[in-house]
Length: 574
Image (cartoon, rainbow, N blue to C red; front, side, top):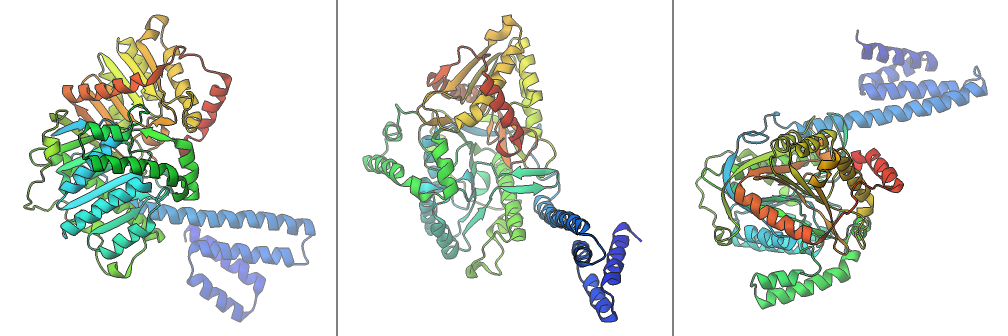
């Protein structure tokens, strides 16, 4: 007889001895035969508790003590039941397939493709629209946060493309936090049930392995089985799709790209409308966070697969896996609303996932603007890294350290967060001792900075101060620190350049991304001299619009305390 059997038997006889009577014994036996173990434990506790607190045999002190203890135990059992229920859901959703998910992911072997970095969020939006217009077979998109007029515009374009190509299938996954157009999403799901699928990915508590506050943090777009794709840090929100530079607003960028006058005029009108209406369109939580974050200076990367389409195939497969996991999680928790039109139909995600490796004859997808781009870097060496709460450690984090250890001349860290894990910090210190120059561009508590900078800025400062103070005096000048300084614009970039290598994607330099792997992330490592040169050129623009920190080792008591508090909540905020 096992421990659970002993417990069940004890519970049965304990209750039976208290309530007595053959009829009650039969009723109790029926209950114990047709309930879960946890229900039996709860029933035992409640019966015993009720008898102790109502019996004349016990003093009032014992009754009160029993009531308090019983309440605590009952709450503990209920919490435990929810724990194990959530654990089962997370396991089933996270382990749809084996750990060796796909060839080419988290690998030391590179594949070849063409690529270039975007200038900023407005440039990223332009390229997203170009990829959507070029798509002929499928579109898979994860934006982490989507909402406002930028997302409405994207969905309008997608609907136009679905009308033009009835066989086109579209899957979008996003957090619901900033979604403002639920009715539009529902309409697309109802009118195009065989073409359009929206998967909600809210913040959740993920159990197994460990307990993690988990977010779908990926930002990516892939079309036509991976012929073209984008990876980076920007979402599809009005705050992400500008230039991030006050002296160079979006309509000037569009004029520079020689777009039609009507498009530029409509864009100016859209920017004005956003300022008037966005505060009233987000949810209460969205409005709160929207008031804190300001606008963003972002950066993405556009890729075209070469040869057998391997680079894009890997991205396509991982994006589908992400959607499958969240769809499975939502199915288990009731988070997927099923319309009458989709009952009994295999979901679009399951269909694309099942057919992901099928051999097919397709017409090649051409994107003239990409092929003719002067910034295009050909035949770059590309590696893809996927991580999430299902994993126990970050392969991407280990590869980042390998790249730092291989650095010979220069490391540029252009990141919103500078919350460096100890092993990354040590690798940077050792790199400086080898003669490597380090340039840090990050967010700080500058004049007129977004309110969120006051939350994570002190910890950024603590970390770059620690890095410099760990160096001997003759090497401290090898580290330069810049804090992005544009009125109410936050630096949102997640880019590192190490000699001829560029490391980018969705991961922050922080606990959730690199240590606990709490969040779903999609990152890349590219080796190419021209690609690294193009990335550095854009980093130089960021430096131009930043202030150099003149005393980077001076940290106030407030900043020390704030940094310590921030570390305590790293499980939640990174």
